[in-house]
Image (cartoon, rainbow, N blue to C red; front, side):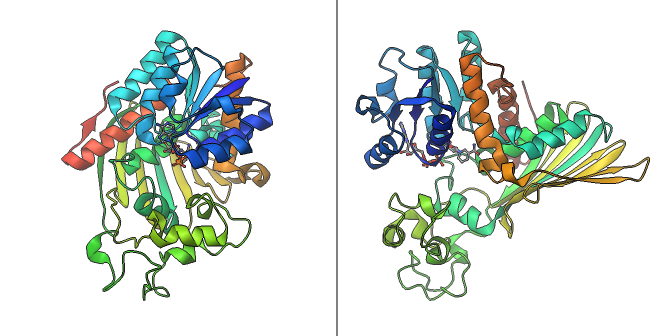
Length: 409
Ligand SMILES: NC(=O)c1ccc[n+]([C@@H]2O[C@H](COP(=O)([O-])OP(=O)(O)OC[C@H]3O[C@@H](n4cnc5c(N)ncnc54)[C@H](O)[C@@H]3O)[C@@H](O)[C@H]2O)c1
């Protein structure tokens, strides 16, 4: 199994590690960031003639591998995916597929036309927690679903890292938040209900991370002697310099040199050292949406960037019972209306401790199995994934235009 990885950032590395464990060989990588490219090549033993500055150079060559993993920024998904199909590669594509609706549709159509696999990294479909929820629903234990209440609780520090200072902070470089992050949640709504969404209404805005909310006299960078060090929970050195060894996410992405000195240097004038009230951010910090599904059931969804915990919480109301589930507690509670019985299921934490509750590794393995022609579930086929993307585009349209939006398939 020979693989090409386009984009050697944090997601590319996650998949590279699991691909190596699977026994695959990474024969080529592309990234315009020379430092990252070289570092990645050394870590994952990529041959010297397999290093490329951009995806265009890779696809100028005749096909030389079995599949391509595309883990570039959101706006660099469509080009390499379409080029990979032209050369006959199967593709594993990071979510969101693209910030442009037509491009999402085009990629799905092209994969069907060429008879090539296009799987999207909706890793939660492979997480045991969600697999269990799906199993309970499909067994009919709570009857027909009437309503789902799904909340994405993003921890305050995670929100500031990714959506204020980081690479998902504005639509020009990434996507609207409901697409960038919550296409996972919308995917869960269609996955768990097994239904398509008909229409949506949504509201939300950027309420807090705005220039007018900056404390008086706060400098542009926290390290420029900010006097709010003790009173601001977003003070960058407190968030990124606490770990001395075993530096983990998100502190390990602010600089390639993850030593204390390397990270300190990165905070001086780098994006993650900025005052959260003085960034070039624009994505909403809270948004709600109500989806009407094809069978008349509804799903209410909240995403909030001000949470103490980083987790998803779900309540599912059925005609025969209901479910409360808490992702990071690995806990699913099922209540049966007829018997009055309550069952609490705990998901094995040794699996869920891995990336995305165990979903990253299991998705990658399923993709590689599919490429090898082994039995595979292909649970995140692009056709499945397209649905959540259409829900996100419609929700964003509703939020901006202040009206209900119907979804066209
Ligand atoms: N599945 C998930 O749960 C999940 C989680 C986080 C991020 N993502 C998605 O994964 C993608 C990558 O995110 P990340 O966190 O790894 O970002 P990152 O910034 O760490 O990595 C992206 C890499 O792509 C490289 N790149 C940019 N332009 C390129 C080009 N033309 N050719 C080749 N490489 C190029 C960048 O230099 C960078 O190294 C994004 O689309 C993001 O939304 C998915």
